[in-house]
Length: 504
Image (cartoon, rainbow, N blue to C red; front, side, top):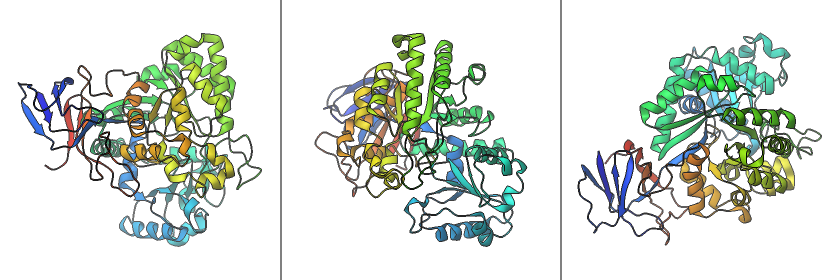
């Protein structure tokens, strides 16, 4: 299939046409230049044509369930959450009730719901409600009674809160009551959402505590059906044989070195400002990190870790330096090892990442949602919020790949780009071109794929056509002022094939 897109705007380029033959870009030029032989000519009438997005951190099945189950992201208080739960329960009289995305940090009374409150709202019902960061949840008394191991698991409290091992026990119980058919349907919903938002690829961050091994094949199937490129990671320490069995890119992603700031489980060097003397929870030592990185490197796999708090990042950096002493810096850097989130890195940690070629897979929407002097980070950390998510410092040191951590934040490439451009710390802002590159070429690079991410002849034709209701700046990139609407995808092409288009 030979397709010509004409009448386009290409940011930073005088070209107005792009030709695709099969899965390749074969010509870039202006409308008044000749390019013959197209089977399909699409006049996009000034729309922006740009490389398609890659989401470098997704949980596809969890995302699909969040799209189809009880959505609690809009709950404005504990009372509102319980009202939403009660209304949802009325329409699902026989189901285990699963809700996703509550965030108490912005409520008038910043206190999570309890099992007693859930019992009053939906008497006798089995309920699981996960916090927005996915690192803690609340369960009802009725559901807890079905999980005998819960009462002795670390991280369980009788008010229904679960974190750490207790949360894993609960997730295992949920997994046992979820069929592969349900998981596949959820993965398909997530892939449809990605395509609709102009994504041609994503990185699935699977792990034993996220879902069963069977999800790997199901996510791949859903991605293939849609036409998306899925790069899969398995977050398990030292599991080289398992990685080969599953055929994953690496033992990385949600291999957790600590938890999350919202749940106060991220590992800090000094106590939480709102929960002293608590410093969160570290799950890996520097020695474990080093052993994992060496094992993965020798097996030709990417290694990587979820690391948010400064204490966790220090341990991870120490581990990488120890691995470099064993393997050599050049050998280590050649594997494109990666870290997820990287929210509280010291200058020394940033320097280590750059020197050892470790990529930073980051989520700009975290700053947009929780940064600033009155945000959740300031509540948890006090003045330490000012050093959070240093995008420009990281970009100067190493390669960035942007992701959503969906369902923690919604899928949406331009929202993430805008968040990077409007970072709460002006010194850490990126320009639109750099942020867009991190969400496109950066994602492919992090997956070991150097064949995409630019509108250049010979590159794979992963691109999107965008309506830009907020208008274009002089450089051809969208205006991303917070009061302006974001671009919306008119068409998404992955490897030259249209995988989504708006009604035309």
